[in-house]
Image 1: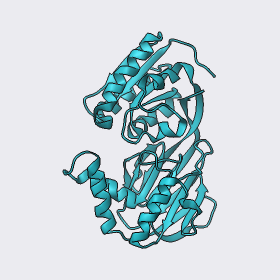
Image 2 (image 1 turned 90 degrees about the vertical axis):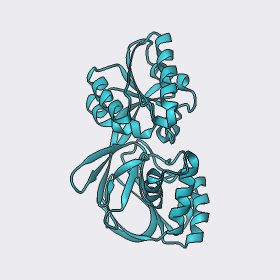
Image 3 (image 1 turned 135 degrees about the horizontal axis):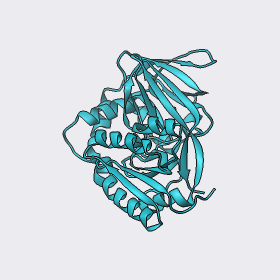
Amino acid sequence: MTQPSGGQVAVLVNPVSGRGAGARAGRVAADRLRERGCDVRVHQGTSAAETVALGRRAVEEAPDALVVVGGDGTVAAVLGPVLDSGVPLAVVPGGTGNDLAREHGIPLGDPAAAADLVLDGARRRVDAGTVTTADGAVRHFVTVLCAGLDSLTNERSNRMRWPTGPARYTVAVYLEWLRLRTRRYRVHPVGAPPLVQDGYLLAAGLTRFYGGGVPVCPDADPADGLLDLTLVQAVGRFRVLAFDRRIKAGVHTRRPDVTTLRSSAVRLEGPAGLVAYADGEPAGRLPLTVEAHREALTLCVPA
């Protein structure tokens, strides 16, 4: 359904997303919406944490739509109050991964076109996810949670001071590959027997993509109320390199050494303290309970 022109729109900008891309995209998006007759109020902090607090305040003002300019982590950080309010969410990609936008065909690299979806797009009900840690803390996510080689690589990259830029992640991948070892995972899906398996990568996806377009859960449906789980079993260090190519092509789930299943909720157990990441951000350490909430979010998408 096409939305009428005008209306009150809150624009939340994470200035540190995408190494400054978020701030630039926010200016373009806000200008575009004003040109089209919207009453625009921009909320931009000086840090990611302040921006999230401003986002909560913006939702309390009950705008006709909340436009989040940033990456998947910024979207997830304000998801709690958005879900409680029912305010429609629009995304202007300004992060490094932008996998929620990629999943739903939201324009990448064109903030004005992404902002236009507030007025010209359809409003689709999609799933949201929660992660609950052993101490009861709850975090929302919108794409994929992972625990294993990929989350450890993220953790190492975040600790590194050199090199800077994209090369830092490449070096982190290599260092984790050198110390690669399999781990025993215990997966407890709702309504099904537990799965105990050795592997090096476990992902639970609402959507197909993580890491900037890698289809780790290639058959995920973002509105079916289910998590798609992908577990890559124990393989040798050099076979991991071949698996990396298959994962990027989205054909890895055809392999007999990849286990997949679907469930609305799972409890994930593994080595004590193994870190999990969701939407590119730390989500807690195993054990965790992960849940999909069907059609909990109203998202502005291409018509």
